[in-house]
Image (cartoon, rainbow over the protein chains, first blue to last red):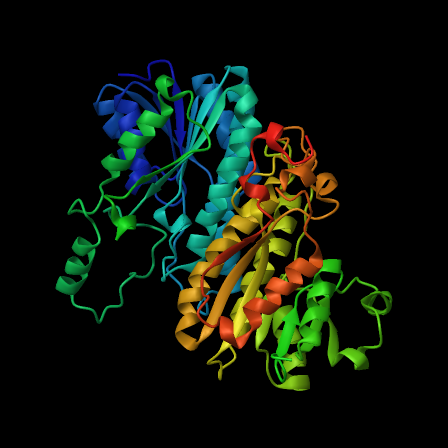
Amino acid sequence: MGFEGKVALVTGAGTGIGKGVAVALGRQGAKVAVNYIVDPAAAEDTVRQIVDAGGEATSVLADVSLPEQVANMVGLVVDVYGGIDILVNNAARQPNLSLLEYDEATYDAVMAVNCMGYWLMIQAVVPSMKARGGGRIINISSVHGKRPTDFDVVYAMSKGGIKMLSREAAIELARYQITVNVIEPGAVRVGAKSGNPRPIVPPGLAPEIRRQDAHSKFPLGRVGQPEDIAHVVAFLASAESEYITGAAIRADGGSMLL
Amino acid sequence: MKLRGQVALISDGEAESGRAIARKLLTAGSRVVINVAPTADVESLKAAFGPAEKERGEVLWTQYGLIHTADVEDLWKEVLTHWRRVDVLVHNSQLVRPVSVEDCDPRLYQELMDVNVKSAFLLTQAFGRQAETNSGRIIYVSTIHDQKPSGSSFVYSVAKGALAMLAREAALDLGRRGVSVNVIEMGPVEGDDVRFASSLSDVYTAYRFKVPSAVLGTYEDLAHVVWFLALPESRFLNGASIRLDGGFHLHYMNHKMKRE
């Protein structure tokens, strides 16, 4: 239980990696604000898992791409829990469209949530972190901040942007003892993702080929779980990690090596 | 004259760098489309472009915004009507503004992202939509700040970080159709100490001497690498980032600078 007295805000925490992160921080003693946008029941399930483990959590609705909603959400969390120590930027859209399939509105929407939303969240939590003498900002990126996806060009662009957002924010916010780091997950097995209207692999490809393909891409022999990423978040959020900033930790089972 | 018969489209005639690239490609025999912003004074830009165009080759000046699909489609239509093809796309749009993570206004963030990277995305789509495309070059002029934080203009860095991934994605997607897509990470030129003045990072303090040779880059240096990437012989370069900074990015020991 490393996070007693700490408050964490996790965006996109109703499902997938965000849910795993929120639950892990909550179980380790943090009060957790569970942000969601589409599925209140999923966010409530995250809250329930934390409360069942003896922790404290609340769900908060906001579209992270809208400055007003971000400000309102952060204001609410500060009112309820007294401040924010840990921000985990995780909410992302991934429509799985190729270069020529993207229309302008979808481009704008993906960049707004995945890239601008990360910045808006950082900007909004800085005053509270400053007031508390420091903070931890952890941006969930992807191996696709470096390696192209070959299935969603704008998703990769947004992750490339997050790389530089994190480095710039790290040097700007260092004077407040706020650290900013990146985690680059590879493939992570999650439930049905709300932002994922289309499968990455075309329906024509047989499932066993998909499985073989996936297996052959992970030296550690398996796809990641949300808990794998949550461990790294907890490490970066811990007091002991105060000297790490502007760094990126790839957590992908070695997949980037193949 | 190795680019004879080709048509190159350059995104920004307002910038001296864009015009330097245009001059170089014209000299190599290419026909050149120079786009400028709808608000720009084209006549004075043409004057700034230098000697009579007919001495250099053919130039088409166009005036379109590049941050909406409809405008980019109109630009493409005009170019195809005029020359029926685009072989080389050079995206060189650079908008640098001092902004901080703490204080930046969301509208300014959006403008900086649109000019610096969305325009590249839309132009790349337009290039890829040419039905007959089975060859071509896309060259994004970027910056060392797609890797190194500037400490002064975070949105510019974010945009160019995104641009780097657009290049890698397009290198695969359009690469299957014979198009290669590469990035030039431009380093310091005269004036960058003002453009990137920072209270957080001393990277541009005495910046000339942080280039090991103590010589800053020029737009002619940039134009030379654009030309190189456009050459037919450069066909196997795809998805690459070429750092063009005289070694500036590698510097960190101030006491070893050439001057001091």
